[in-house]
Amino acid sequence: MSERAETAPVSAPGRHVSVVIVGAGFAGIGTAVRLLREGHWDLLILERADEVGGAWRDNTYPGCACDVPSRLYSFSFAPNPEWSRRYAPQREIARYLRHCAESYALEPHLRLGCELRHAAWNADRQRWELRTGQGPLSADHLVMAQGPLSEPAVPALPGLDGFTGDVFHSARWRHDLDLSDRRVAVIGTGASAVQFVPHLQRAARRVTVFQRTPPWIMPRHDRPVPAWLRGLYRRAPWTQRLARLREYTLREAGLPALLGDRALAALGRGQALAHLHRQVDDPVLRGKLTPDYALGCKRVLMSDDYYPALGAPNVDVVTEPVVRVTEDAVLTAPADSTAPTGGSAAPAAADGSVHPVDVLVLGTGFRVTDAAYARLVTGTGGRTLHDVWQGSPQAYLGTTVAGFPNLWLMAGPNTGVGHTSLIYMIESQIDYLLGCLRFMDEHRVGAVDVRAGVQLAYNTAVQRRMTRTVWAAGGCAGWYRDRQGRITTIWPEPTWRFRRRTRGFDPDRYTLTARPGGSSGPAPHRPTTSAAD
Image 1 (spheres, rainbow, N blue to C red):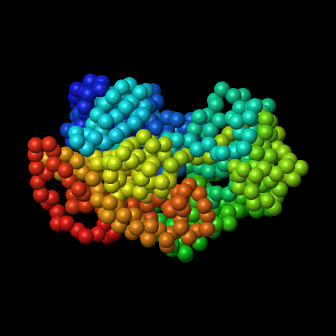
Image 2 (spheres, rainbow, N blue to C red):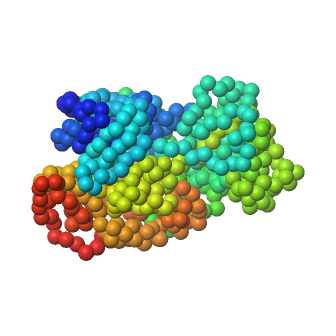
């Protein structure tokens, strides 16, 4: 798939390195590979698990697969001609990441089973000082590459701790459980649930799906990649690059439906409703599964077997709010109740319904806007990212944060995408990081810190552009919004515009600090007055 990187010595434990990368999923592996290819040998990748892979290592639930076509959901520098299906299953993606780590000789730079416990910026020494599960470490640059889907979100359901049956999150799937004679309840109907519920329907005696909001679902149209096409990709790699470009272009062409194009949005809505009507004959069930918000306001899902699974005789779809979990059941409020899931006020059982349960599966997603690492990273003035963000993450280009010199966020605030591959955005951020490192080397700069005014102007412009999109005006609530009601996950423009913004480092928007004993030199670009362009 790729050229093999040379092996270089790595600093001993407790020593100083140039770059520390936290996380060995797509973002961490991609960053490390690009750094090595540009000659930045002095780096370490900290991974708390025992192997690489990130979310594709952790999420092993039945049916787990990507919802972006495989040839686009991969590194541009490491095309894989061996994808077996249009939408690669989890095992193939995890294997692809392991292959990338091996073929680019990342092993000497990996510290597996090494958790970051704290990182603090030392302004006097111009370095990050880290505490890890394997001892102290320091670095000139710290790259946070855990990804947005690394911390499972567990709902605050009253009584959950007292449930005596088996309970687990979809990202921690219990493959050891025999469900053939069990009553299984599913909380959540997001992207993971849409994939594993059909398996549960086939494996369990009875399945109850507790649905708070029905998702919009499009047909998946998954299919095997024929052997002749895989052979063509191996013999003529340019054909796979061309197919990747076509896939990217088609997905960008559909983006206006999410950015306010009513005609295109109506076309998509019609396709989704037609899919629902084709697969669900029961008008009562169909009514439960029909969203009442704009297509795209929440993540649009793809499935060809979710609706048929919900219509099976052993599956119930419950739309009343969940208010409490008992030792062996889930209690829901009356049909006309507006009590929120996880609310503190639980009505008496007589006022609602009791649903006996043996196994409880939480398909409740991840902590995207309140990532745990924000409490671990301390910048200037002794403030953590958590202190600065206050539940509303902000960064410049989703990558750098004022008051946190030489800190780089991969897949940071407002870099998410609802229509194409996140890896495209991550590779754009990596280009930006590399441009900065080249500038710092050329001008003997020791630290870069984005100006607070630049960051504010940038995020103000992003939120202004957000107002006309379906995510802001679509009439729904979800994980796209943070605790303060701001949409801090999604990029509200075509992704090629983000690529253009990150193509070159812009030193005039940063406070530059010279290396000890040296001069930072002049910035080679004319200063600008606004970051809102």
